[in-house]
Figure (cartoon, rainbow, N blue to C red):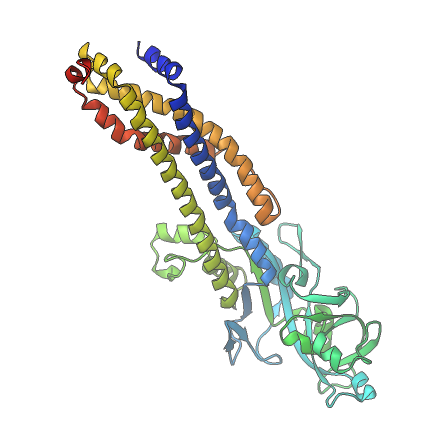
Length: 435
């Protein structure tokens, strides 16, 4: 009898039920779309932010005379300790190895060039040579290889011409330096470079292009790391390492000292891609290093990600509140229309629980229907929003379906709570008398 009453309610009042279902479909569609994007926005935006450049810098722990400007640690280029190139494959063995998108070692060498002396247009023949990788294959201890370099960590650098080959004696000249001496640094020319104070280690380098970075590199010559190691007589070594890693915004746990954490807190901190936990893991596989966040990049990322996530949750909450209010309005109207039915039910012995259960069953049925349809509509909406914002559609997540159904049921129950309480208080006698 109970299920018959529920079925008859849908047959006799299809318009009210359709309005309630429509409110649930719209609310759950918005919730599905925003939750789908919220689950992906962190990783997607973090990957987009990697176009800003690396967010971690690694230097020797024993290096001297630290100088920090704008969150970046600049150490003397020709003194102090060096790091081993052979250890870099270990970076892809840490817990968050898949979050490391790339890394590039740098070796700065004070040098001079006889070619500039012959050109005679510069007051000094001294130049800074910066050795790095552009697209280099790094062997990983598990037997695989990882391709990385400036292409991964500094994608915003603008190249005119072409980049050097990592295994060739080639060079890319900074835009400002090339502008000071266009004849000596024209693309296709060969320039000889040697370390200051040495007279027998000049290396002829073919210029393949000019690069604009907006930094000190604009007044330097960029060469393959192997060439800089040869000029400086430091084979297999480098001075700085820039790492591009996907991280999550810092919170109260991220900023705490890992030594002060309880075992449970430490496990949660270690297994979260905070920039602090990734730095800690890098220091474990590269002993004797100092890993620091490039704050001007990391802080900007964290603030933007936090604001975007907060905006998505606010939109989701607003959609759910709007759906609940719409359900409350339609439920109140339905209860008033069915006063006579409720009065008859109570007159023949129905309890308040029975009446409430009838309306709850109707609301839960509508919640299942509206939630399922809303999930389907929201999955399509998430794809459209993902395509317009990130260039690729957000993938459907079936794991959200039971969550959306549960939210739909909760919204339906909350929306119908006040009308149901009113229906439970109806006195059958005045209703049957037509009052």
